[in-house]
Image (cartoon, rainbow, N blue to C red; front, top):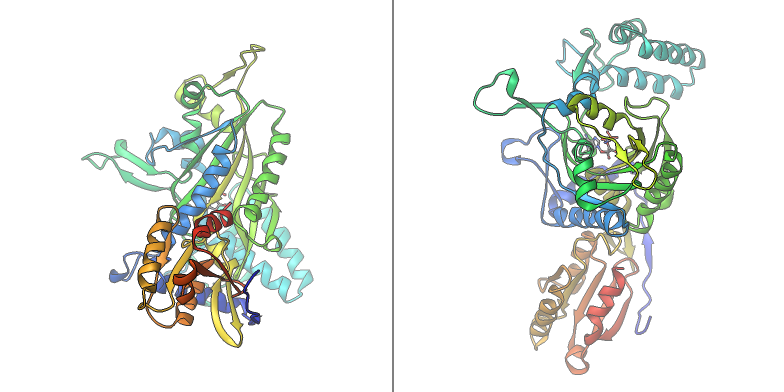
Length: 489
Ligand code: GAP
């Protein structure tokens, strides 16, 4: 790097339990995420994305969309309706099986997931090294979860073990009841049962019901995929951890239709591709990503893996990769009475395709990116907060800063800003010292600061400051656009 000054960047120690608090505060202060309807005290688990947040989210979605559709000749996208005929959800199993076992505390009036209470209890026994109790409780839990009346069995176990709520210490329990996670609303003027519609709890069903529409209109042949980004809704009872678990969230899902018998191969290929996407496209640290294989499978799957991320509050799922068999197409064939089979034009074989699904949560990924990027360090002894986001996802790609507003530098910087704005989201800032302006950009993850100084006016050059190293180099004014473009591929 030419004309570079040596800078000493020293990372500061940041305890994981402090990171979430700092992230939530930064997200609000700098316009990434606000609590929803905040002036009315907000609404639990609902959030609004601010100016920078909506840019960052858009970048995540664009990167996903391009890597899933544009880079695959045999994957096309759709944008299906959120509300669908309620029979869809009977066919998919969501009306009967999309339930969580809930238990209420009569004293504190709080509601909990019964299985989570037991799992937390098991975790506590493990931490305390009570091996004998651990084995006994684990065995009893497996039996209770598989019992014909599992609600009763879970309740009896909670009572027998004297399990209390971790947050309140209270344990004045009701019976365990199944609670369906789908939001219901009424369509039309009369609120009777015939007008019940659901807000979709996953985007996948919009893809399954359009299998033939997409195949025929796009002349797709198996194997092929359909991708979709859209909102999903779940009446989650267990909340918390900022945007990790929301009631309204966005999914990025792709259903890949294959010939029965070839699903294992497709599953492995997608597993690899999806895992690599996190590091190559989003720049997430490899060592914070983990695989988890499901033992307890959802009603539609015969094999399932999660990609998990090391959040400051624990290792949690960001994407599921599921081998969904022919469950959904078969169910829709039965419930709609329409033939969902595929006919291979070459061999005349008819079959219901099997499906490999990749299902990522955009909001969780957003949080993973922030958590991965958040750093505190000191540049030549001066402390700063830096979001080390990859240039591809960073909301603002560059800031254009006149060293001083006067002497023609302000005008030259404004002109450069306007030229760059046609291709990139760039900010112009002339308020405060140059050091303060750098810090403002570091904190929102802007990878480059371009400074227009006295020399710029004489030589038609600018300095480019790199966010992470704080090093600077001087480049020709005419090369700035090309420089930024080269950093975004
Ligand atoms: N179609 C399959 C499906 O919906 P899932 O594992 O239930 O599978 C997929 O959800 C992804 O959606 C999860 O990995 C997660 O990233 C995201 N997700 C699920 N529930 C969520 C919630 N309440 N808040 C935010 N994201 C959620």
